[in-house]
Length: 124
Image (cartoon, rainbow, N blue to C red; front, side, top):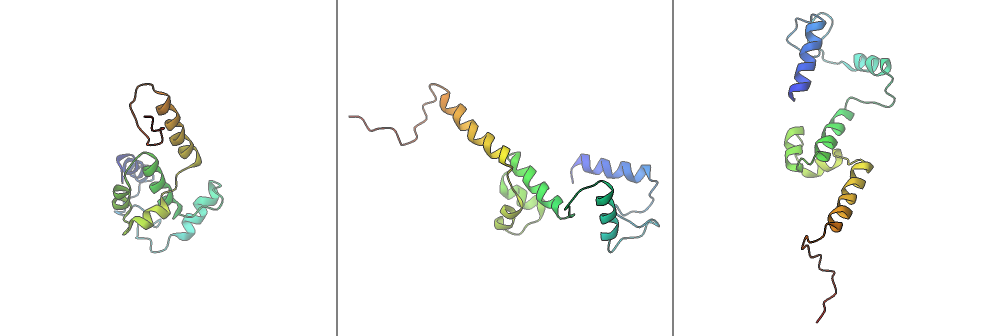
C-alpha cells in the first residue's frame, strides 16, 4: 500500500471514530469475514455499473505498467506467482498504446540520432 492509500484509510477510520484494529470491520469493530453485501451497497451508492472489488487488481497492475514499471516489479507488488498472470491483469489503455507509437514518430523526426533500423538500402 502506498502512502496516499494508507493516509486515506487512516483518515476515514479517524473521521468515522473506528476504534477497531481492522481496516474493514463491522459496525461493532469486529473482523468481517464476508463483506460482499457492504461492498455491493457501496458500489450501488456511487453508481459504478458492473464493478467487482477484483477490478481493483486489474487497475493496480495496469496503472503500474502504464507508468513504465517493469513487469517483474508489478508481479511482486501484486503478489502474482507468474509473469503470465501479470500479463492477464496489466492492460494497457488504447490511449497509452497510441502515445507509445507517437513517440516513435517524434524520435524518427529528430535529426542526427544515428539510429539504424537495419531496413536502410545497402548502397555500394
